Length: 262
Image (cartoon, rainbow, N blue to C red):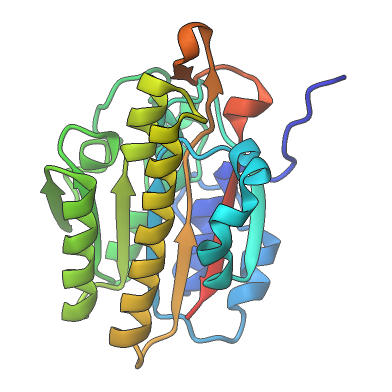
């Protein structure tokens, strides 16, 4: 059976996020996703909350769909997407938030330099918006979009990142919040994508998203918020029962994003 890769691309996400806030897309970004344009059209979206769990593959969603019920109940659009090569974290998040392919934004291996290519964050700043990133120390999202005139909240653990994001939602001063959690990726590498430890980490990610959505509902009632559950790449099992990613194969390249308006 021939390998099947998703038709829609990760390169279309950046323009979609800017379109939601009526902001010009990053300079090198591909066009926005039609489904997200239609979702946001006429809704008056003025906030975006992006939850970025690392390494959640499309095949994981397909096999364990009931676990994702809290995500689906808080969103209305489910988008299978094709990530980029190599399918590793800094490369993929570089593409997600610039809308550019790796040869353009410059990260083409597992390295974490500051991306100079125009990004969602730059586009928002030019438009007078206030974006911020909440991430764990030494992870890609804490490094590759530094050196912008924006706020960064770098903490020790995923739970701390989620708690900080809730604080920021309550403060209600940011137009765009990106929250990174790497716990599923970490357990997947050590124990395998479907191990008890990894499935528990996945459940933790799903519950974190639900909690963040509830915080938006409670504290951003005067706003219209686009929320996204948006992983970067997938994963596969390797010899010894561990997990990995980075290859041009459906398990690593096919991911799924969920979006909704609150």
